[in-house]
Image (cartoon, rainbow, N blue to C red; front, side, top):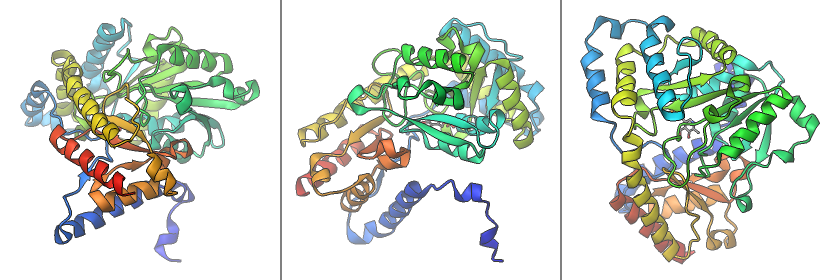
Length: 401
Ligand SMILES: Cc1ncc(COP(=O)(O)O)c(C=O)c1O
């Protein structure tokens, strides 16, 4: 039997097709762009920011790097200073008293936590509800747990608000987990506290776990970001995921945490004990410094994203592309323009053509689920001069369609 046949059905089922193909196109463009005299690639397909983390966080990491304990495995007991800093932050941020011993868990990125959670709370065949469009690793986590995904379509005409009445009572009763995330990637909708409260109420009523993925909690550009921790029912049903990747620009350091009902935290911790030994205490020191000395960092970077959003939208709108102004930082969720639809292009074909012609790489909306078809995601993760130049290229190309 060829070794390639020894890959599990589970992994085969992950099907990261759209993203893999997009990456391949990027590579091809990079390889050919200089000889063809085309502009360099402008990659707006990843939510990985160009903005810098707070210096106090980097300083704290540097200061601890040489210590022997920073190089040692970090068992759960050694993460207590981090968990205490998180509990103090939750108290300041949401006015909620959280037990650092039992209700907080360090993660190697919130993606790691949300992807592992289904294995901690679901049995094979259990049903779980995702928003559609969804963050891809939410689906990946369900597939790795051999769970059955169900989808709640977010309607653009309803400002991407979740309509929980789409499911009947018996469909709700059949669910074991619901994964929600507002502010929402990819639609860049801040969302409302009432939506998360309603989800918590359904979770308690129908006996399921509510996981709220909230890495953008501090990056609402309009309105106040919702949080499960603000919902009075969180201890009865839920777990919430926060990250240092977006608000503190520390994505490569893989630092995040979960706060949640004790049985859920315990289950996820047990699962993770099989998988990892937590992040180094040096990295945790950086995270603690971010929470304690640079809690305002997200507020400080928001004006940069707001400026990028407004100026990009202005260029595209002037070119006749009706851009919906997002209420959250980092992304534009672009409905394919009339010219693209008239040419019969789906989101992947549109992004492929755009890349070939302009060197600007977006993410095809279909990569975020069937509900993302007809859209493309643009990440505002480069300096405004580069973004505007990219938008001009997009506008010029649009006119040729
Ligand atoms: C909804 C959502 N969850 C999780 C992540 C990953 O965050 P982290 O870097 O903490 O793993 C992202 C990153 O884009 C995201 O958009």
